[in-house]
Image (cartoon, rainbow, N blue to C red; front, side):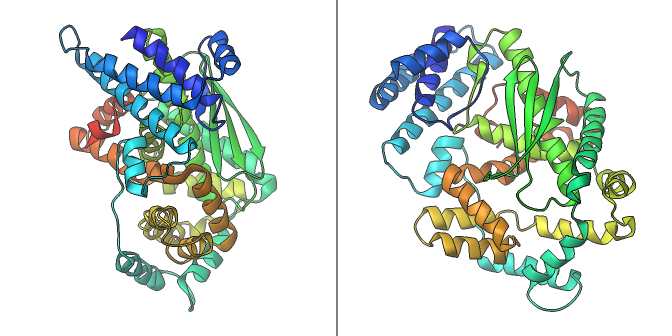
Length: 403
């Protein structure tokens, strides 16, 4: 399998020469990337080689493979399947939303009716102050909890420190791991982790739109501890360095690995701050740093808890839009009505959907699958939960393995 793994990495780099978004991280030999960029293989040749590598994996029997070896083989197979699908996309082929997510991310998100979202909105209607349309009242309510731009870095760094301290209690982090934070604009996403190898990351925070107080912990956990930064660092230590599995020196964005990455990053928030601990930390530590009144925290988190029940509304907007059932204007309107995004934020999300398509399922469905996997095996045992969670971050497990 080592030969297949090396060929897979080189093939992913070859596809990255055509698709600037495909390779999210790479820290393998520099000469492999240079060779891929120089050769610039035709897309058809990349697809043919992916099929050939899948055939080679199919010829590998179970004899001599332990459980990790079997997971590795399955991982490479589905990553290569997703690679072929991305080649098809670049050549102009389009799949229905659910079929696309299945072949790229090894999972399909549930479909909810408008009635489902209307029921949640009815509960929010009662929880929010004032009268009138729920989206407008929700936005007006949230504006009380915006982090002032001049306080953003102070608040964010306090959140990072707390997330790291809580993660380090349970996960042995690699020596020397660290990341830098940059504030950027004009991006279709709110935050991004760029993993550089050697246990280092660059985390970028988009300041185009107001950042609310709860996003500090969200971003610190999701992009940092125990999210993307920790995930990539553990893969580098346990799979690349200890096992010599070179396939993990590259992270193709449009692949099943992304559901594990995004799902574990989102669920990592609840791992770091279980139960009421997050609200208590933000109220006592972050609200004062942001210059916000802590006495509004309880109501804020009650409303935000209800709003989280609308998370799959974003998937539905993407599904309908990408399936051609609605246009971009209607997609933004749906996001405003059912995902409670004010118009500028809804427009940003439509740009994200245009660029990343069915990738949107990786956040909410990924979180739900990781939660189900961890909590069904560990129950309420916090030590066991962290052990399973860290094990997931250090293994070749696929989304379908979590179900």
